[in-house]
Length: 193
Image 1 (tube, rainbow, N blue to C red):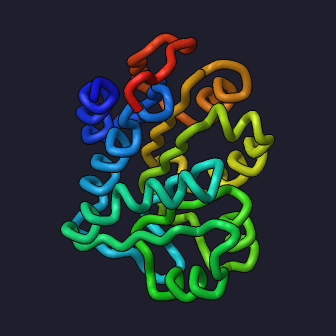
Image 2: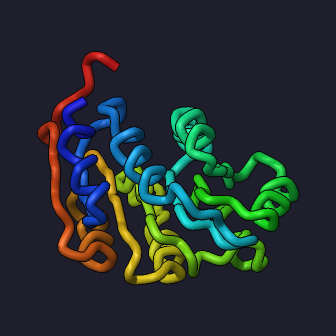
């Protein structure tokens, strides 16, 4: 997909990436493959994931997990979905054992951080997907607080259908000299989902 061809080389090189593309444009593998590649070879310590993917809804988190899990398995990386509506106890147990990548909604992840079940200080790569939807849902203050808990030196990959307003504030505050890739005008729709 065009978004993958545009963003993967920069993401693999460690650059912060700002990608604009509609839902269904192939963003999951555009951020997922570099995320998995960059984290391969080392394991996470208990309660300290090395990768974080933030999404606005449980359904999107489950879809991202389903897309990345086969690749993660081959590379020996562990994933855990951290969302409301699923057992918090199982999420805490997985984090205690050590999870390489947490795929989360902001609310549940905040709960786990506040309970000290998850420590974001070892996160090397953060992905923020569907940032515009998170802004529309009022999640950006929570997302900002979570990002404040991750190392400033970490890589950030932000994907959104639009890059204005509150999303632009997030970009300016948390991304360092990002490479911007856009595969479609903001008004384009996906016709072959």
